[in-house]
Amino acid sequence: MENSTPGFTQPGPRRARSAKGLPDLRGLRIALPARGISPHITLWMFARKGNVNIDEIEIILMPFPDMPVAMANRAIDGAILIEPFKTVAVEEKVGVLVETADKVYPDHQVAVVLYSPAMRREKVDLGRKFMTAYLRAVRDYNDAFGKKQAQKKREVIAILPNTRP
Image (cartoon, rainbow, N blue to C red; front, side):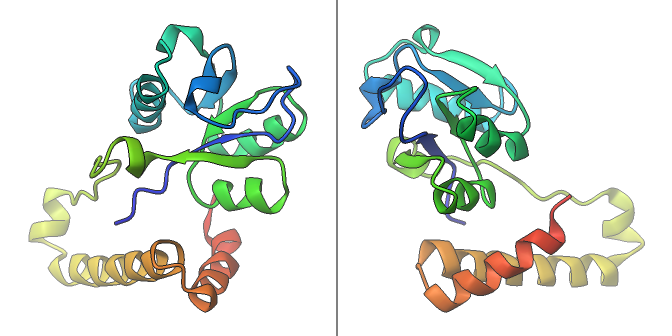
């Protein structure tokens, strides 16, 4: 699955400068959903590639859905975003892509799917149906965003507002 966790900054950060590259992260307020999880590691890798000490970045913790809004109202300078919030930030022109995680940390595992023992032993058919549907969704997502198939991207984006919490 494509690792699509991107680093974003707003076009005109509150400090009146835009991050055009990873060295520009120094001194910025960057949002993460939590410390010690994949986006935090991604930010650390971005900083390392930009020759910036992670302590030179102010980390602001907030949920993914709040990040595009916080960028729009200039409460933060940037964020490590996932879909669909990446698309929201770009389409609403509150953020620009600076770098993608797959460029600084290829093959970084950012998520897993787990079954409970009951699903594996007692609800085998349900588990199989779930996994089949999940893999079809992964394929659609990768076709849309990894292979950049325009029609598939429109279809996936149309589904997302109806499926996220």
